[in-house]
Amino acid sequence: MLVLYQLQIIFGLFLSYIIDLGTHTITNSASWRVPVGLQMIWGFILLSGIFFLPESPWVVFSLSCIAPYDTHVWRSVIYE
Image (cartoon, rainbow, N blue to C red; front, top):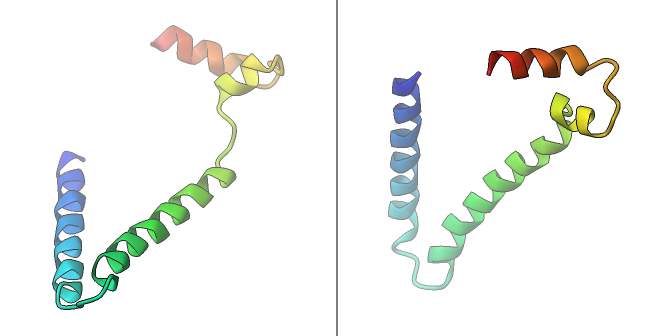
C-alpha cells in the first residue's frame, strides 16, 4: 500500500507540473488563478463527500443512542 501512496504523490506532483507549464506563459492574473481554482474544485468535491459518509459508532455512542452500536464500540475498545 505504501507504493500506491507514493505513486499518487508522484502523480499529483507531475500533474501540478503540467498545469504550471500550461499556465506560466499567461501574462495576467489567470496564471495563478487557474491552478488555485483547480485545487479548489477538487477540494469542494472532497468536501461534498463528507455529507454522504455514515456516522461513526463513537458519535452515536456519545449521543446515547447506543442500542444498535454498543457491540461495535466495545469491540473496538477491546481490540485497541
